[in-house]
Amino acid sequence: MKLVLAPLADFTNAAFRKIASELGADLTYTEMVSAAALAHGSSQTRHLFETLPGEGPVACQIFGHMPEELAFAAHEATALGRFVAIDLNAGCPMPRIRQGGDGAALVPQPELVHDLLVAIKRETNLPVTLKTRPGPSPDRVTLFELLDAAETAGCAGFTLHARFTSQMHGGDVHLDLLAELVQRAHVPVTGNGGVHDAATLKAMLDTGVDAIMLGRAAITDPMRFSTMKGRAAPPRRETYLRHIDYLLDLQGRLAASFPGDHVPPPDEFATAPLRRHLFHYFRGIPGAAEMRRRMNEIRTVEAMRDLAALFPPDDCTAP
Image (cartoon, rainbow, N blue to C red; front, side, top):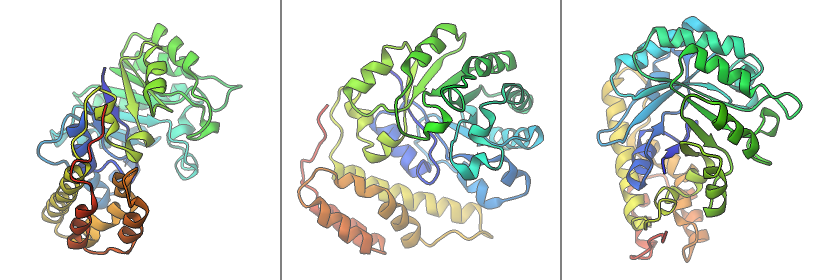
């Protein structure tokens, strides 16, 4: 069974991707990279291309709606030699993305999606894939037109978040449409949406997908990459401390690679995502609420490391 870490803005930086790979993710994705921002010279956007030594295979996800901008982004990502694929996001439902004509705004426009994929393929020798949704709403299914657009453009894979754009990230996952997609597709299909335990994992596997992508479930508990593969995860204390180290490594690499940019100093760079995200490492252990309260007050890496002493020494997540 192939498990994939979804591209998630503000979460899937190189440090978290490396953790996910170590815990069992077979493939990870960058955060969404704006093709328009790259085309307009945003060096801060280029920070999203950064990787760490020892990461597993990483695909780069780009978003946009202008062929020339997406072609430029694909060229820039390919030239780095760090990625195994280029993915076009045609499914993000967030209003700020859709209102710009990007993400899920492309779901009702299969012809444009085709043209965007063709433009991307012209500028890369990497496999090109598409991530999208079944349609804008249940009364308007465009999934199979999108599949035809992707295959005609020469896509190497197709990922479906099996909820309609109108559902955002909640509600029923339409496994019937996912199963029909698998039957019709001539390329590998990755399923996404609502997988968080053994039952939902099995239900999606039963559709016949080639891989399963974890998004919010991975953020709330990255140990799922281990447990869903039937093996115990390492102690959370160990993973937590490694994650801090990887954040510091990433900060150092960004500061060295982009000396003219604002890269937050190590304490700020590491503690901000820890407060936003990594408190999930405390889920289900004695004193978790107090640990989260303390984390919200912490502003230094040293204090973050001190919190590790509060983990039970043998705290492993069983399969």
